[in-house]
Image (tube, rainbow, N blue to C red; front, side, top):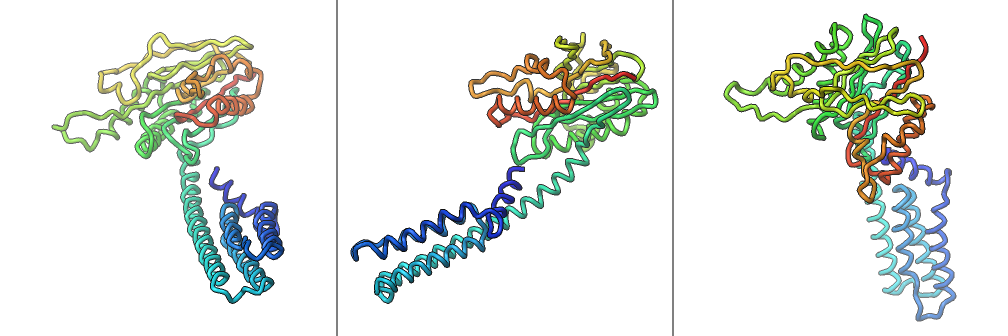
Length: 373
């Protein structure tokens, strides 16, 4: 949103809004006029007027820049007239130079604003695509209170390879997916869309969590390899680490399958427990290639008041300026009593403060609290 903020800021500085910064070039023009008229004949400050439109282009639009250029030209003509040298070649050259510089500054404004408007239109399309692809998690699912957070590594990006999704089942439970697709760019976004689509299509109708994991792995591998010829060697390296969870409404437990993904954190009061599975399966996309036909489900207690944190490695691998990793397991218990939405707001602020606002990788976090039925 930085680009939109810059555009809104420039608009707010146009006449009729908050012209505080316009005082700078205006004061410059007045000062040059007064000093040049009162100074000895051999001192000429007129060339400094070129700074007025050059400064204005940094914070205002084309119209204000053109106005400032016109004022600078008028000021130069006034100086020449008051000093009786308006018709001299030197003053005429200074006026011509001011006109040329002002024209160039206005042109720069026009081109810049046009490019930024085009980029904003592209970003609006990207934002619409994001809202369809990475849909907001439900705030309430049965007895669960849920909140999701996605932070792109690049300031101007909206979506990368991290993903999450949730679905209700006919068996009165909530299923969740959090994952991290290998790579970045359009390929990662495409594979994220594939995995999310497969989950949303099957999560509510697959009878068991292992069958859902098999379905996701098969769908992922099929789409990324269906155009390969039978004789072509399988060199595809597309995969996604993921965790699948199933949380029953009327049973204080969480069932999960880990596919090469960092373990969830369970917070009970101020006590934190990583839900480390006995067996972590291969990432999604590798299972079928290595003959994985079944997935083991791990079950952990998840009682009323407990808070579950799912996250991607962009959180735990975030480094500060000294190369130190973000201490997620140490910081999380500080916010265990907060509502999931508030917890994620605090986490986002703390994480960005740790990395000085520059993440090295996309980061996603899902917070789930079990409430009384």
